[in-house]
Length: 264
Ligand code: DGL
Image (cartoon, rainbow, N blue to C red):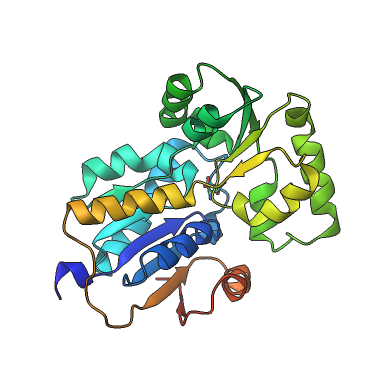
């Protein structure tokens, strides 16, 4: 098989990376994709760096075993803990999740922005460096998205308590007069509709998926890895734990044909 026709690998601690997968298949419709959801080990947020590196390496070994030509780490927490290790250990290109502080800071009128992410992401060098570099001229408010990964993983997005929980979570940020909320965890875009209900209308929510997929496209071009054939791409999903929520979310976000395979 020519390298160009090999699939793109993508993984997350669970179903969050589906927010990136959705953008990937719509922006690069020729590419076949293999997704791994590590729902059995979710959440990664409170786990230590060594544990996340070991879990991420297992998935990377699996995706390389499936012949992937490039891997998207569709998890901010895993990017923060493991991307340097993965890049030094494996020969293929990796794309990580970038905290989208720069566009928010540049666009802010109130000069106050917020980032919602896991504790693992906030502790990572990547976030610390990016925020130092790009958020000099704005007030940068950070908030750990307490319970949000759980809400998405357990299929509780439409539970009546979710909106109350979100309202309480963002209240201190609204009090800081923010006009941008950066989503620093790939699970959170599934809560955008609910967040819009509890945020003032001037607050712009930033989902980094489009920027990450743009970057993926650039790297594929740079390495001459784009799939240029017109044959139908395939979409496969593997998971640890259970697939109930994975199936549910996929039903809601895509009409494409895909297959879900149990574990590895
Ligand atoms: N989707 C992961 C992220 O982007 C969720 C983290 C977790 O598992 O706690 O950070």
